[in-house]
Image (cartoon, rainbow, N blue to C red; front, side, top):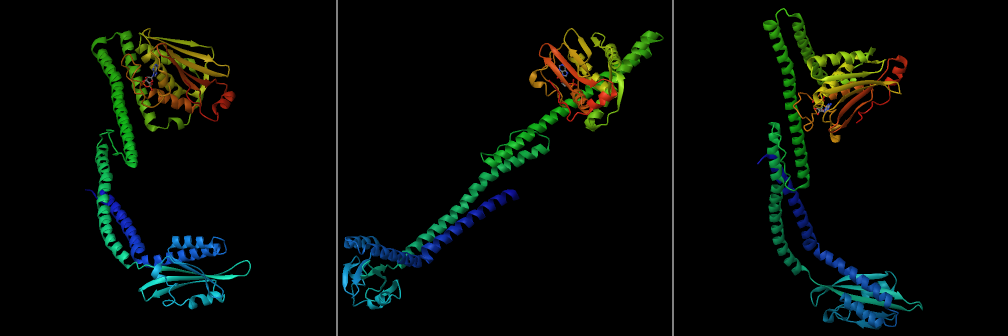
Length: 487
Ligand code: ADP
């Protein structure tokens, strides 16, 4: 057992023991120590209440019946005297033990005088009856009618000895104390075990997380807080395993992407060395392949550097006016050489001079056209269209005829490392970084961008840049909020 589990058990045990001891102390105090005093206070309150009730009914017509009822319910005897001290009414519920009906055992004078003289409104005396060796409470109260008549109410209740009751309670409380303490100990063990077992399990499972085993099988054992902890750990394990999958996938993709151009470069260089000889056109074509594959390598490494810097969105832009049409043509040419079986069309308006960061926009175009080539349909056709918009922006569209992107994935494809698992009909080497770079560059430009796609019909990625009218461009470059990708 670990220190933590012990401390849980100890905590519960101490709490339960404290609770039990406190309950027992309360029981002992009220049932044993204060029982006598408590009983006397209760009896005194009872006799005074009865006195008030009798005072209320003493002048009524059914005074005797009421008196009898009150005496019966309070187990006491009652004597009502007139001013001269003569008995007006008398009820005896205590029989021989009634003091006020036994002048030999109790003198009423001492009780009545202070009340009659008006020195005290009412008086309660605790009196020892030597005859029966017990105690009694005697109460006196003077009342006056509306006509000025006075009467004295005298009540008597016996104080039963509680010593034997206390003895019984004491022996019962001893047993109860023992049982409660044992139960507290047992209960603390059971509860501690119930709590510590799932915790112990979760701890040993969590150790596996540290060792890179991302299994989401935590169980809180039906205890709400532990279930919440288990759920959080399950979630974390799931997320960690996703990150781990992405990492593996990325390493695999990047390695693949690096290997393909390297193999090509090596193969073409060997061809030039061993086979081509002095055939200049052939050698030039092969050198072009080497150059374009080197460009691909450079682009991939640039992608990785940009991504690892994680600062694309904050990188200061170097804005210049440049001809986007020319840039697209160069990129299309480059792709055409390495992908001669693909038709890449350019549709363009006359003026396509934009004001933007040239190298970043080149990166965007490279990624979008490369994706279009990778994902286009069997007709192997890609169209790039540049068109001036009524708002003065130049819209660039890169359209393919491929499988398209399901609607639920449209917002995900811009995420870093995201690669769809469903839409690829053929294996496409990719890092899942391209579109996240595109998003970073265009967001940095505050440029609207997005994608329209229909499953089975193809996709159209687009973005809009300000034309190179510098004044107007500057106004349009700094909107309050960056625009979100639009589907
Ligand atoms: P990748 O290197 O995988 O192409 P990207 O970030 O460029 O990474 O793209 C992310 C994902 O978006 C791709 O894996 C693919 O599923 C989807 N995607 C991108 N462009 C297209 C497209 N033209 N047609 C269909 N799906 C695309």
